[in-house]
Length: 328
Ligand SMILES: NC(=O)c1ccc[n+]([C@@H]2O[C@H](COP(=O)([O-])OP(=O)(O)OC[C@H]3O[C@@H](n4cnc5c(N)ncnc54)[C@H](O)[C@@H]3O)[C@@H](O)[C@H]2O)c1
Image 1 (tube, rainbow, N blue to C red):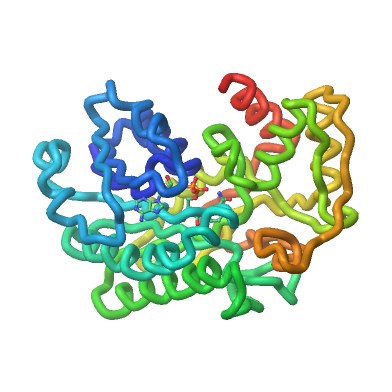
Image 2: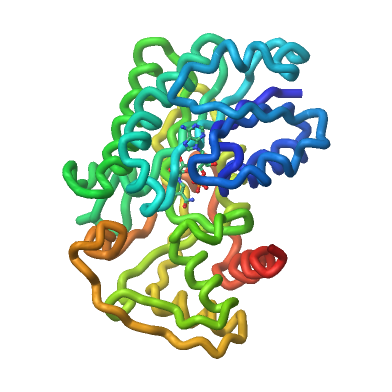
């Protein structure tokens, strides 16, 4: 058996990852402070003896805390770290801007120190936001991005950029076994209904019979990856040779306009809601003047290195996600 530490374990990706790792018979130590998640998700697995939850802010060191845990004492070492902790939706990280910068600096140092001490592999979750408002389509890993250093989203975008550099320096200086993933829009069960991301907004508006709100004409495009595809790639990446550290794009290249997405959600829910087109308010930091117009991953590297590509079509993933929201 392996012992994995998952930071951000109560978040959307974290909850799905913990579930999968437990199914694969890992020992899992989850760490979270509920900055952008609800406590009930950390309690989902409490009956499972192979799971242990630690409430902690990852900006503060936690090697001692992990080493004093029940599962560490049982297993004696940390094999893998999945560093997910960080608010991922714009309203959340804009409200927690200074914390987001610390999470992506001090928080990343702390995860890397744990990896270094135990010679563990560490998968760190970066983002497609490191490409900013991209001038190259689709985005390939070698594209260096078009990012604003002084905007409301910079705490996250620049935070994730420096987090990659910190990981890279641990690789270069200490040969720490890093794996850098740049995640593109991902969705699925356990997304917080109030996190302000487009898929959750649309599904929840439609389920409540409210109209779906779209900025301008909804022509901006996005590609959406279902969570199971992402997690399959995480496990494949962890199994690659130690020399391969990425960064690697993980996303679904199928592109949809926001309007198309809204129409599919309405059709699948059989909703009578309409679409409201609203003007973009240039002063609203949460919204579209800071939103990239187009985002689509080039996943050639993932295909080559991981023999991976997303399998789940948008409609199929949306059906599963809608079922989850109905069950809440
Ligand atoms: N979901 C996506 O589409 C997406 C896209 C790109 C990158 N990512 C990255 O993947 C990771 C997980 O994303 P998610 O969608 O699950 O986000 P999420 O907000 O649902 O989960 C993040 C989790 O981290 C926890 N957290 C935040 N700050 C913390 C701290 N200081 N100490 C301990 N825990 C803390 C939150 O409480 C939450 O449970 C993030 O790093 C995010 O930037 C996600």
